[in-house]
Length: 107
Image (cartoon, rainbow, N blue to C red; front, top):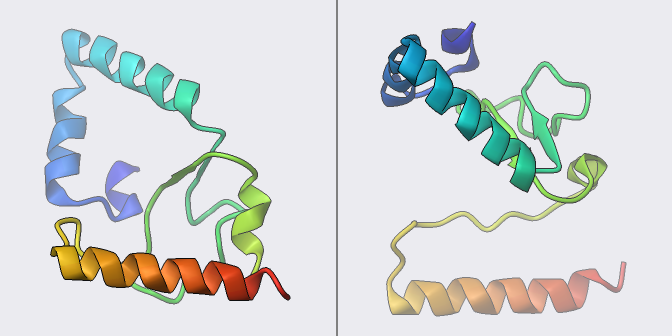
């Protein structure tokens, strides 16, 4: 089942580590933490999964979120970039987000 989600090989290896009794306890603790800090969890099989992501072969296999999952079904704009942006890249992303948020609230 886990491999059908399209998880990265490193994550699948971690799942196998959870098959031991000690690993199972760790896994249960992680699930409790996820549930504590997450309002919803969606997989591509869920009706609330954002349909705009499904055409992409590398769509997220699991989406964890805060707030209302239905908001993901609304029209959206995403800014995608590096996890380690340069100072200039960070500023450009901030500027785009700021001006888009100012403009989009008019609709």
